[in-house]
Length: 600
Image (tube, rainbow, N blue to C red; front, top):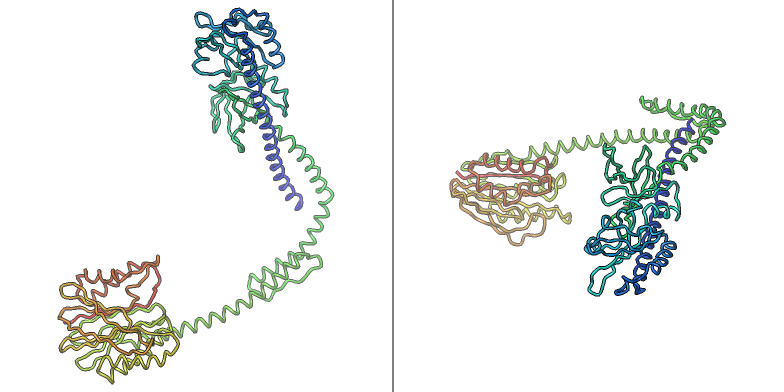
């Protein structure tokens, strides 16, 4: 059964494929047959048209002869052409005084002679429409294909019509003799959807409609499109499904329908299924018993492997699979499983080791964070005459930013700095510079000398590492409210005046650790009571949201200028809240330091 069931499924799939291929083959053959029919009709129309024109050019029907030409001269020529060209009739229609078209000569035992054709097609129709090939009702054969040639006098007046007709029933019989394909039936559909000729019994006079889905109106035959070329359809008639190929009837507004029963492609599939059934029966009878015994024996190593897998799943990682003499591919699977368990044990040990190392590293970083936090001064500067608020946030456990302040009598040094990079490396170099600056500030009172000396010492530490630190250093005297400052490659601080306008503390200088500072620019400003100074690192104005957009310097300045909060604490909170709204759920991109001072 293990062999038969997949084979049966595959066979059913193949039977379906064979049916599809056979349908495609049958429809292709039907399409070619339809094309042959269309070509035959086209050639028939050309031959009849050429004959009518040639017959007219015999000069027998040209004024003044057309009224005197005896029937005995015209009839034999028409009769011979009708016989050789498979036409129903060739005939001559005379235009009577009242405009009627009356047949004066006709082949086929004078079939049409004396009949008035005006009820079937009029002179006005022939002249105005310009039609010379058309399908119309026939006085004898229900519907016929007509080909006409107008005979005019010298004044251009139509005096007669030379015509050929082929009864549609006769035409369909002729078409079926060209090359029959299966149980083929041919029908001709009028522009209004009426079947006007058909070799399919009972199909004549039926109303036909082309639709996407059949409707419940039993009085009509609905033709549906099928998958494939655009001229291929299907329909149901008298309880039997049929394939149909549709083609325009040449030179007319009628449609040619060529159909066969849909069960034709099934015959090939039935033969395939019969052969398949015999093969499956042979396999089941002769191979079933052997397959059963072999399956039972081969299940032994599989059960062993299942047991080993269950033990490993329960946590017994020492369980292993043992090879079996009839294990075949199961042996390879078991050995691969053994290798997987061995790798799993090694991986678990490696993960445990890596986890322990990460926990130790994380603990060291936490210790570094606590040390950094303890080294940094408090978030409020205790200096008379200044209201202050400091915000500091590291992007990682330890930060490359730092801030510091040092009071000497009536003066205070305030520093905000940003080391290149984040994490441990940035933190170490930043705090190295902090120590150097504090030592220099304790020994020296001139800001320019402090900066120059500190840079020389710091460059000695950084050497060729490429590490540097930007900083903005302020020396403020509360006695005269005079502030001196040095900008070492840092963001320009903002000053908010009492009238709400903003200034920048502009100063030029390179960062600490880049190169020797040959000349240091020291700026000065006298602060008025109520003015606010904003110091910050680029983690503030370059904060990023989830889309990667920057908060921007312009947004920061606009917020500070427009803010009605004039205390350092409330203004700090407003700036941070606006940044949080902008950043959203994005992870911190850089260390952030913000110091706001207000002169009382």
